[in-house]
Amino acid sequence: MYRILENTNHEIIIDKSRFICYLFRVFSEQGAKDEIAAVKKLHPNATHHCYAFMIGAHNEIQRSNDNGEPSGTAGAPILDSLTKNQMNDTLAVVVRYFGGIKLGAGGLIRAYSKSTSEALKHAIITQKMQTMVSQLTFDYAFIGVLDHYLSTNNIIILDKQYEELVTYTLRSVSDFSRDIQELSSGRYPLEFIKNEEVEIEVQPET
Image (cartoon, rainbow, N blue to C red):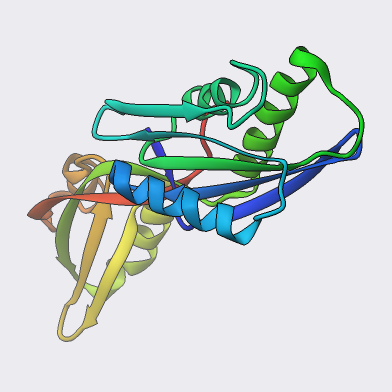
């Protein structure tokens, strides 16, 4: 599942109606309610403030609200967009300023869905991942080979120490000790430090 890195918003216009989608990181239902109230205060003259959120380790808390739009035409499509993008701990509030042209039920569903999905496309997305932190100490002559291997395998260098030998502190999503053994002909054993859950910037599957 995915989260947004930071709160953001994005606006689209459909048949003269403005749809402004606000995305928030939220970790409780009360936190979501507070953000919804803040958006309503920011846009007191908007026609509608529709929303949906998904919270919890397995998205066990899910809510949606049409806020005066025909039943099932706003909150549900917002929630559906969050679900399709596999979002977690995320609130989407879509503010609508009516532009004078009625969209009909189908048009509203498409509009609220598009507003949410477009906002997600413009957001920075992260994924919770289990990673391994390890250390490797080696001779200076091994730097070039190692740096090339690390960059091509998306292994992150957290720290570098240059003394009589070089020591890298590394973060990876899997154990790569066997590769290091092969690259170094067994000279440099990879030392496991800890497992750590982190949020890594990614692009969600759509």
